[in-house]
Length: 165
Image (cartoon, rainbow, N blue to C red; front, side, top):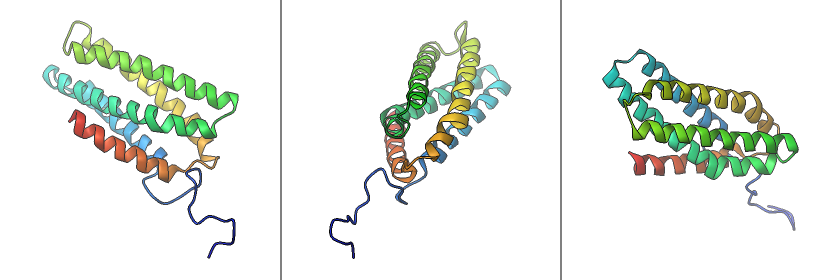
């Protein structure tokens, strides 16, 4: 039984076991998209358009959950100058990625289609490397509740899949 003044409910900033680990979930998304890019590189022209559509959908969902949930939560824990700069850069990188996604979706198979997908791949690889080697390890050293945030990410991801599927 809790002592007077103690709370039985953990605040959102404490570690809990309520959902999938947020960082693991995001890394799985990264692997999925990397696999689609590899598949794209080996595919026939017709199949490339289908795969590019899958890449665009996956990236749209991933960027949305990061921007709506993960980055705001991460900002609470990466609140020094380096952490703020890291998160600002990630959001700017998302803008470039989303711009290319829009162009690819607007003109699948167009004149610069393959070049756009190639540049998108490069942008995504750079973004993923920074998240996985800098942001995620730094966040793991804080009291960030990866399980609670992961549950929210997973729930929103499922909603977006329904909307975009």
